Length: 109
Image 1: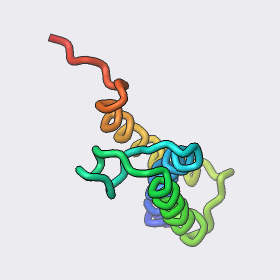
Image 2 (image 1 turned 90 degrees about the horizontal axis):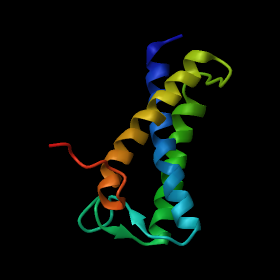
Image 3 (image 1 turned 60 degrees about the horizontal axis):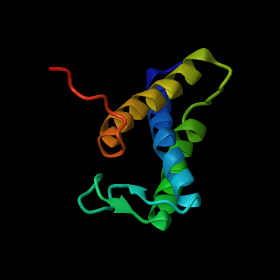
Image 4 (image 1 turned 120 degrees about the vertical axis):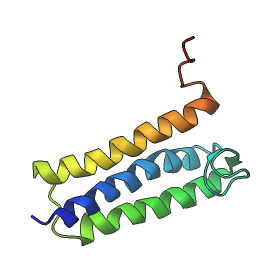
């Protein structure tokens, strides 16, 4: 199994992690933060922008997962690679957006 395929699956998981909250926010009609806001990544974007950007990320997750190699969710290495990308972007998003929504614990003195 080529390691480049596994790397592609990490990126597929990362795009999937980014797609899910944006799609949900867009479908619920709620604003959320995207790269298209002012300032980028900090200001709110409309629900329509969230839906479109979430769909674009869903397509970007499809490309490495379905078009690179032969991704099989039953193969541990494939699922773990995808999960690693999903978890990595999930942690980054939790830390970044936690500043805005109160999800980051206060610093200890």
